[in-house]
Length: 467
Image (cartoon, rainbow, N blue to C red):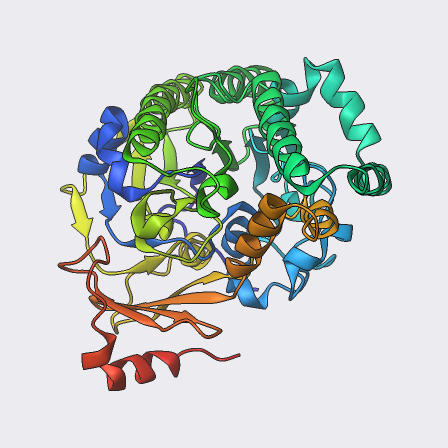
């Protein structure tokens, strides 16, 4: 095994702040984080390897492209029988996978995971290699809700399928027009009830609890070994604290509800409020780390697993085709000694880099920007939220709305790969949709598809794919 290269004889602590669902386009709203970026190294075109949480985390922890992860089904959307209500039991890594945490453990590190995300938890093998996992999400989402605990027990795979079969049977006795109205009403009511009950309307989605548990660990359990600490903050993730606005992206993407400028402004404004709050929690975390001496010899990395779309290309949220604001995420590197940042003249690097390559950068001190231009790949293998696939398939013959949502989900389930090199980006659709080529240097919003004038370049980009 290749040995770690530390800056000193003793190993650096490694702290990763994973700001779930933060896009680079809005990082300037985070005043404290922006001040850190000016003091450290900021990568302006950092690209997430996937379009939603688990593929991106799994890629970061293994240095593998998303398509190479062994346990992601080829047709994830149709594999709903392998999905429990929170996806926490779905294994996206091989059982014997060697992760970043596993390798650091061999090098003498103590590995601690604080997660506000139920997909990154002690119940999924994404946490392979961590010595201790703090399931912060469990406190905020389930611990204080008896009803949710009961629903999770009732709505396991078999329970959910039995309920869906009962709904289908009942639907046979309801006229189609009435069924549309009933289905839409119950869908909206169910979603609104769930997001209010589990606390997702709150401004805090676990950030406060992360810091409380971080301080408790450092005060009572810290073993004075070099540490790898990974913290997943969920404040930027939907749903958002907005009253009177539906927060079901499939109703918007299917055209059942109008994705108006009013809706987009309300959701985006709430998103900004959340990331500003999270920015303050990051500041609190760093003060806790400083207080207990964890910044005496430390590398801090601030990044995200994916971004978020607010109307770009007519899309909302993430887990969709890898357009720039969905996969262009912040990436900031900071080195601390004796509690202070080692100044690096606030370097801002515009070369495309992949979050996946943090693995090699951390373990082997490999630069994120190689001497020769590198092809950066981000992959969308299919949508994650397949929980209602079976119900939609049962109702689509009798409910027009269920049919529209069903076909919309399938349309967005097509495999799509984004390929970056230098200032250009190709979006390759594995299907009938026309590929798109953009000059990201002067068209970050991807408004002008220049592929018709650059077919040869697009073909050369595709040669980088090895499937």
